[in-house]
Image 1 (cartoon, helix red, strand yellow):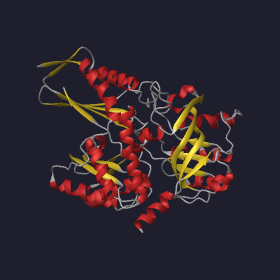
Image 2 (cartoon, chains in turn cyan, orange):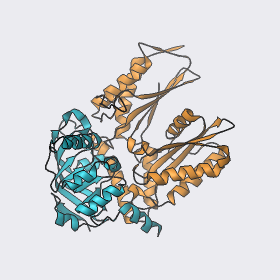
Image 3 (cartoon, chains in turn red, orange):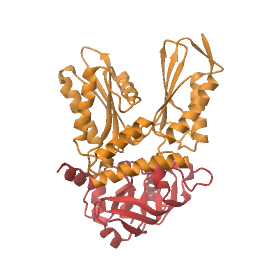
Image 4 (tube, chains in turn cyan, red):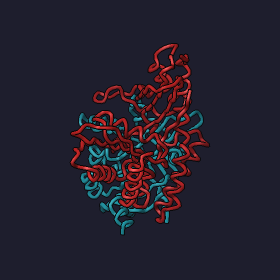
Length: 182
Length: 280
């Protein structure tokens, strides 16, 4: 039932995923939330490239709590993805077709997911201690001044997610609720 | 007159900020366990299991339950026979928050300006509410509040003609619109009455009550129960993937209000509804 996937998220991989699939991700994901998205798109407009390779990349919407000495990272669960909707279509268009977050997405994001064969994964919101156990390495790569909103390169291992929106635009929030209500 | 040195407030706030972010109150744990027993769908069951596993991991690893360790909402019920000495009470509370969030490796989530932004770096200032009550004690409550759920909260200046049906419809609409965003299963704090500003604070204070408690007024207790049932019939479920448990509880508080009004505030809180209280 549970499928393991090795990142980067190639187009072939994303096309093989379906709404509701439980997936364990291993490999590299990049953290970014509101302030980092705003800065990345501002800098793009001025011709400054995004501080990581967006091709087949997965962006994790998270602002972790600080690591205690000896820990890789603090608590690290997803933040509400909808706040990134304003900027997400542009990043998806640049190849960053995978996103991890929680909560609803806009029609524009769903359209971009469909057009570029992306995937929106959901991790359990409020389960930051559990999710942190699946992060084996954390490196700060850009925007250190943003504190918890800086961009980090995380190496994840068997990081548990569910496909909320697949590359055909099916949305688990719509269909899951409907199927429960029968 | 009893003298309390504000350094005691600083120390208590520091300790409680750390502890509240790592240990979920027992009433929330019990409510989640009850919800787990009542869920029939395998997806919802798995999510509730992981949420409970997360509590154990947070406790054993001294990690925050959730990375959004919130804005520090601090409530003081200060006895009118207490004389605070040794400095400013508000400064003492903020110092406690600063120390707690730094020493406890909690996330600093406060921006110094809502438009121009800029992280303050120590999670201050706290949001402080002081009520003066009879006696010579201080009841101190620390309630870190995350913004995934705060952002889905709403306030409406309903008119008396909207009646009870208007209140119910507004609360249900707010929860349905919130959907998966506030990390369900949620706790719904409701304030009704007062005026624009007091009703919002009332909704927040409703969240400080244990999730399994009911309003002492039978009319409001029945309304809480009815709304909980209707909210759970929405089918949003844990994390919004569909299921029985959309909310763990509905807590309603009310205040007298103006002849022309019926304000209603709905403060939504996530399954990590944190609060700790200590009496000094």
